Every structure is written in C-alpha cells, then in structure tokens.
Image (cartoon, rainbow, N blue to C red; front, side):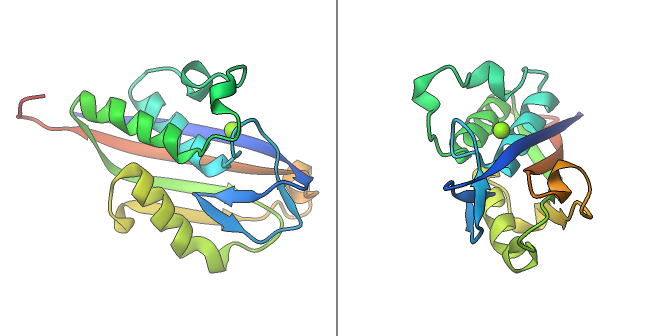
Length: 163
Ligand code: MG
C-alpha cells in the first residue's frame, strides 16, 4: 500500500538570522525568521510525511507556543515524523521538493541539502530530489522577503512483516 503526502512552508527573510535549508547553512545576508531554526525545507518535508500518514501537521505536533521548540533543530521534527511512519510500518519511497529563493543561488548547495534531507529521512540520496527556483523578481520570494519550500513524499507499507 502506498500513501502520498504534500507539505509546504514559508518563512520571512530578515537580517541577523541564519539561513538553514535541509540542515545546511547557506551563506546569505538574510536568514529565515521563525520560532525554531526556521528550516523551511525540513518543515515542508515534515508536513509531507505527516500528511501521508493523515496525522495532522507540524503545528499540531510542535506548537510554536511551546518553548521546548524555540531554536529547535528542524531535523528533529522530521525524525519524529519518520518515527511515526516507521511505527506504522511505512518506509519512504522517495521525496521530491522545490525551494523558492531569490538569492543566493542554491545550485552549489544542492548536493549537501539532498544529503541533509536524506539523513533526516533515513533514506539514501537517490531517493531525495531538491530543486531550486527563484521568484523571478515577483511576489514575496522574488522581492527577497521570503523563502518557500514544497515537498511531496511517497510512503510504502510492507506487504508482509510484523508491523
Ligand atoms: Mg516553518
């Protein structure tokens, strides 16, 4: 049995914050604002996994009103979601993602971002796709006001086994 999940996230870009994408620190004048480490790709991927399981969203499990998650590493959220999948016997088949960011260009970082995401998902890098797009100078992304990520994930449950 297969289940598909979709996740999306957006964070404002502000000075004085780090810019983390898939656990990778990006050199940038602007960083992502947020309660946790504001890793937009980890958040979108977490929502995709939770969505595939029909278990709500990242805000349900990690409310930003909870101080435990202040500056939390977002890979923790994804590891937690993967733990829920594991517990139900589901494995990740693949994940495809898009990061929308005007600057800097992400091409030099794509390999590391794929590795970071693969590690948090506990899959191999060939199961992880990360595509980068710019905002073409329109909307909040294009005006360098925001970073956005989208993720779609496919989970498969083992036909037989003890889960
Ligand atoms: Mg977020």
